[in-house]
Image (tube, rainbow, N blue to C red; front, top):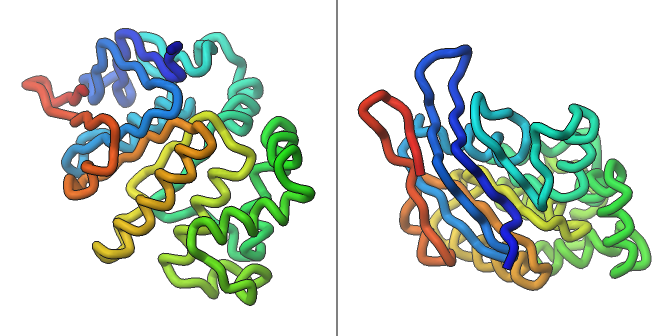
Length: 233
């Protein structure tokens, strides 16, 4: 099966300093659940930003869904990211002046492709948001029209996941989204997230320093250090 993500001879450094990440080769398959671990400061978030096209490599190629990032203009890359990649951030990055439902629907307001996918499955984006919230275990309808700042950390996490999943993007990138949760909540959330990615056929790239979570995933990779101070998979 053709890889959804392919990296070839990637090198990334900050401001021309020694490389902080060096990855000769990497591939991610369709619907694969990948766990990437490494200590704090090992470049996990930097690697995710390279995969998402937020950062560009100093050398080498990142190709996603057959599109080489270096071949895309800045605006084309923004559209590509919005259409094909869902992000779950460590701090969730929810907008406090929007309701729960409005936060979830936001990504489909920016992507016609994801909006079309969501509307092919649901009558409205709002119904799609509610469906995902229920599947992710947030079933109290009284919360849906409230500001996200009124929610607990665990509830905000589920809202962030639903936002990433709405419109069935081909790739979900999760940057330590469970770091603020207790062990029971972490396990429950991962089970729900993985089941939704599996149902939609989305590949999941999940980064964490917590190795106790890795048994959930198809494949485990570690960012390890080199003598020159950089890291590689």
